[in-house]
Image (tube, rainbow, N blue to C red; front, side):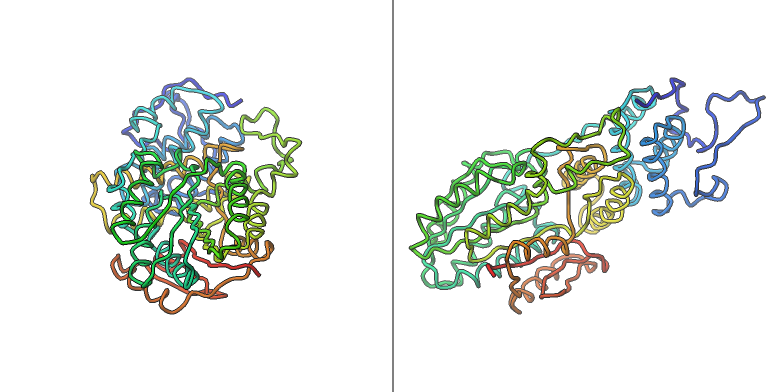
Length: 464
């Protein structure tokens, strides 16, 4: 277990040189320990605020924590604490979030006065995530294309797929508590002269993941049914208690039973997956790192059931395929956060999650409640990625290329988004900051970009 020194840290408002010994007498000769592969403090000069420098500091801090080098970890934590204020620019706020996550990780393997002081400096290490009302969450989602992109692309694909059906069963697996559904209902009411019966099924699996809702799914269902009625659409709503932790096995079983009942009626089955499937455990959760020390508090022992659980994502997709859905829409963030190596994961997360911090400056003023809620959600994600391991680390995002391969292996074939869908997405992006963009990749998959960087992908599939 890491043993931190009990020497009190310097004042947190004062920048501490990364190589100085805080306990050194003025008459003593200062001895420094250089950071391997990293320039000296003199060479760094005023570049501490540079994103690349901050990333390097975080990497060295993570390495120090992982190698139980308490002295070096404390030195870098002091520097980071002073150059990355929580109310600074986007790079500083991003780095501050990673700093908090590294402190939380270090605290799991030991305690020291430094961590207590830093916790006080940041008010608290606990992340205050807001519980939204329906109106608040709807407005919150509309602030940015992050979710609207997937909603718009998915709705266009769904509308095209359900043409001619008198009954449509929509299974909504989403992070935003059915916030997509009102726009879909509205589109159905406007598009079809005779609107189909809509059966909406949700899995009650996201209550503990931001963004959070302040009412139950049953109450939410009543609101959605009333809204559909106001648009002359008949809708049924039900919740299936099911968890991403076991690959939504209860939901799959319920769908299988219901599919047998309604198969002969020719009911359309729509599976709408919006940024939720990456919470299903994937293969690296149960892979054993040969360098892992048994005394490491983050060690996750592989159980006898690992052979079956290691492919839960594959099993889930194959189960969906067995239901022969009319269309499956898969939308998620385009980044790889599955590595068991902390530094690799930190680098990937840092070079992706700068995007929400960069974009927030374009649509939310400093000090606004919505900005606090927005950035608290990102902090929650960063802490889960950095401070947790094993079953507790659920932010296991995979890039588009890997999901595409998973879908193909499960015997799905991709569906091209029509020109109307592309046009609708472009129109939606026109309502937001100029940095947002759209590109079509192989098989006409759609990708949301920010300043040219991939952010979110949207794909549509049917049984091969």
